[in-house]
Length: 186
Image (cartoon, rainbow, N blue to C red; front, side, top):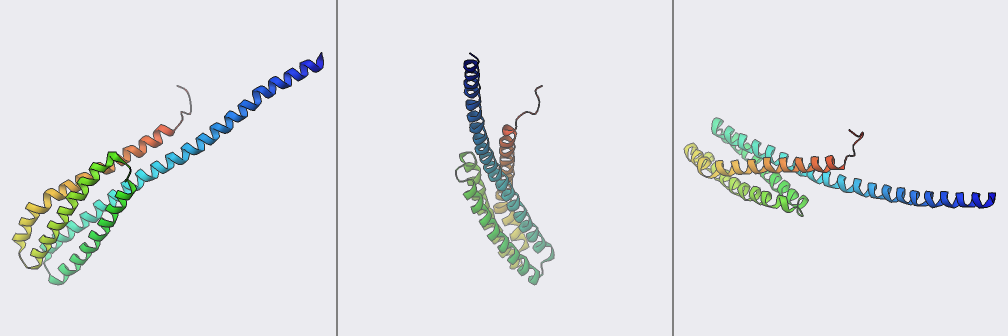
């Protein structure tokens, strides 16, 4: 009789222990997969936000160089700042391409990326015309190009970058915030 009770107890114990161990292994595997997914999503959103901020900074610097061209007007300095701006435009285009690649499968960011790309292209074209006029000594013509071709497109580009940064920041915070488990019951 003692052997029967002992064997039933061992069977009950094994019947409880084995499924519990299997459940723990499954949950650990699921937790590992979710951690990887959350990390990937967070890094994508974080990197996208960093790229948008970098583009914003580069374009701000281009704008400052154009203002310096107007204010100082030395041909040597204008040539130097023009070259700096061309380098920055190249960097901006590379960063926009990287941003598109990074957010390629994100339909919620597609429209914003299109707006940024379109307004940036128009702004870039206007800034080049503006610099050509400034180089030729036509400051008034450069100011007119700024008013008619650059300003609205620059505003749209900077607003689009700010919106994208905010969306990506919110998305990253939501991903990380939703993955946290409460530490205590309230």
